[in-house]
Length: 185
Image 1 (tube, rainbow, N blue to C red):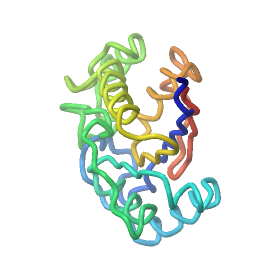
Image 2 (cartoon, one colour; image 1 turned 30 degrees about the vertical axis):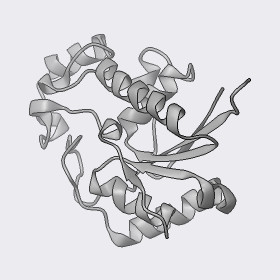
Image 3 (cartoon, helix red, strand yellow; image 1 turned 180 degrees about the vertical axis):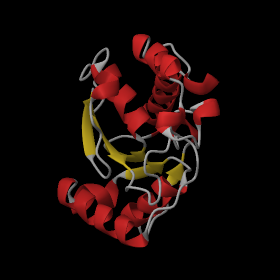
């Protein structure tokens, strides 16, 4: 028996306010209610109402994701999943990007998958979390899944699906509120 294909819609959270130039990774940063509203409308134009009404909605526990996930799942509740959290940037969290020593940024660029920025997580570690979450979801859900998450998680998911590779995985823009569909067998 062949399993039905699964569609996973990865949605990046709305743009936070007041974060200009900041490495915020896992910091809980504010998102304006209007940004949540307009992002939900934008996502609704990319994912059909029928799909949204039947899809299981997951979210990173970060408020910038959870607020949007609540809106997309309503009147149901989204399921928070730690594995959908953004990459931990360790000691870089809360620093301005231009305050991070250049040699550390260069070391990260030189080994995108294995370097641990600020002593936090490597992209490979994020990919392991992503795959753990995906395998769990595959065992328990079918059909369409919506996951409201972060750029780092989306990048590794796209890379593991063969849609990005090498440095392009880090350099590819993942706009706020963007939707990325993976069709999985």
